[in-house]
Length: 305
Picture 1 (tube, one colour):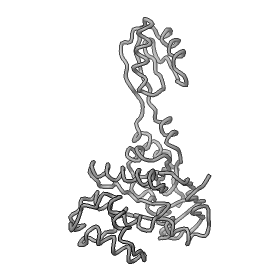
Picture 2 (tube, helix red, strand yellow; picture 1 turned 90 degrees about the horizontal axis):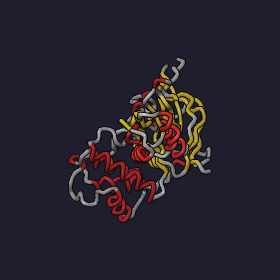
Picture 3 (tube, rainbow, N blue to C red; picture 1 turned 135 degrees about the vertical axis):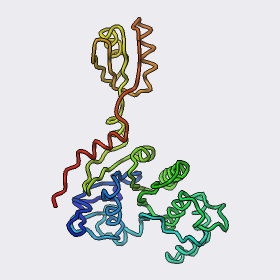
Picture 4 (spheres, one colour; picture 1 turned 45 degrees about the vertical axis):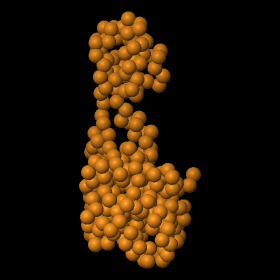
């Protein structure tokens, strides 16, 4: 198993405040890793430590399984905080400027990058007149100029309208699937990250609360189907026989809860009706992603000052 990022006890303090507190995390090659946390939780500081823009007080990190960080950092691209674009330049001029800084002389790189992020038709339009979503895509293009294998995106959907969120989301998935770029993307919006990430880390008060996969998230947040029937004993026997890997509970004289994919509600109702069990109601119940996120935050231990 190949890792692009491994941290061990990474800690960063600003005066008496511990911004990143003993964080040990792992990002595998090919991941879209969602780093989740409220504003001020330590996401940006952690990304700055990984990218070399800040130095840790304690702990260590590896990039591409190497502790020799300087050459490995040439293999990463970063977009941290506000989009680093020049407002009085066009998209092409912004990319030309950064190509000069990086020593890249190929015009084809710029053409390809504009096409990749969907800005090839912006022409002479200045960046100051771009929507925030366009500015974010231009900033991602800048981060991609040196052909990175690992991309760090700090709050790329923050402040975007729904169409901008969709644009950036689709671009992130395209970069991961078509260009094989491993991506760490931070956000405080778990619902949006859940649409693109396959692995997550939750950070609060500088502490990594938990790491889990998309499958883990689904299992933890999967709801239950609550049905009211005229015969719970018979209904439970039927459900136990037709549903594999589902938890069926009788919670009252007329109520059963089934922990399974809510999409199976139609099958459940049909099978019970076929076998002469009257289904009086059927509803999906359970916690959503944001509720789960808030519960994780409530479990966060306090930092010792």
